[in-house]
Amino acid sequence: MQVNMLEAKNRLSSLIVAAEQGEEVLIARNSVPVARIVPYISPRVKSPGAWKGLVPYSTDWRSAETERAIERLFHGEDDAPAA
Image (cartoon, rainbow, N blue to C red; front, top):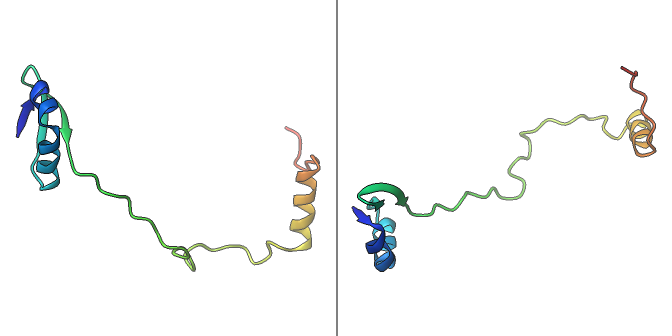
């Protein structure tokens, strides 16, 4: 269905219902389509723990070496070679 801007302003509620029911609703300006009303599809939200077992992580993340590297980063000491 295609409606001009003025008609869309007057019939917005019924046009939204039509879109919810699967009808394509085009809004036109001077008979040229400029917008489309489509039903809103809610984004799927993953439940907590959905990534469990899917992302590998280092087993030595809590090692003494890692702790020292983090300590140096927090104190502004960078042991990376200068470029």
